[in-house]
Amino acid sequence: MIRTTICDLFGIEAPIIQAGMGPFTCAEMAAAVANAGGLGSLGTTARSVADLRAQMQRTRELTNRPFAVNFTLYPSLPNEEAFELVLAAHPQLMSFALGDPGDYVKRAHDAGILVMHQVTTRQQAVEAAGRGVDAIVAQGSESGGFGGIVAAMALIPQVVDAVSPLPVVAAGGIADGRGLAAALMLGAQGINIGTRFLTSRESPIREAWKQAILAAESEDTMKFDVWGDIFPPGGGAYPAIPRVLTSAFIDEWHGRHDDATQEAAGLRDQVVEAMARGTLGEMLPFTGQTAGLIGEILPAAEITRRIVSEAEDVLRRTMKVMV
Image (cartoon, rainbow, N blue to C red):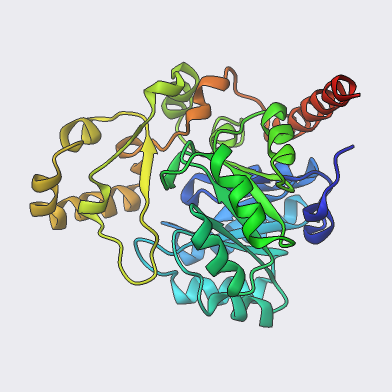
């Protein structure tokens, strides 16, 4: 059995967190992870307040175990109505990413809710620790979706050293028990994973996207470099570039920095329209480099249990070698 400080902190059995991937999460996936002993998450990005309310209610119907609700801080701040809704719903944890969490930390704590914050650099981790967060996710550049440029192997121990004794959760390049074991060896207290759960049976993304992930090699993913030209970060937002598989939209605009800057308003409208239609995944099929490790679609609970079992086996064999 693998039990770390985040298990005690979050009230879970296994140090595995399903990432809060905006509209690409759902109650069925979050509850399945929770019922298997991990921490499921619901994302709020690109989700209406009515849908968020329904998803939280459905999650509570499917599990009596803790779950998290995630907010991103770029390209815009959270919807205030959605934030108040989550405060009133009182999940075990709020998680934040892509910018300085600021006063959101205090507001969550005042409501009795724990806070976890995701960073992509050591300095961001130090600043987040100063905000009083309860745990920090160190996200390596291998991650799908929005991230930085420092790889997990280099980032995780730096963040662990910088914010100790605050617990650190590893993200980026992790899809199985070997990744969990490696994260623990680097000083992390658990893992936060997204792409592997995108290919779960409960994942709400379209089947074509799941099959594209299964067919992809790690080198098929790419950083969509003009994103910052379309959505320039401002305020306390962190610089972040999405890692994706290719699409017609990406093929058309990748590398065209000057053109993207000139056409930014129209391109932003296209992204917003895709969000509203529920087709954002076709335009921007967020996928991490762990695509090369994923070979089948499994129930989210089975993914969670396998990661724990594999990690236990790896650690047993490692300790045997060390002795």
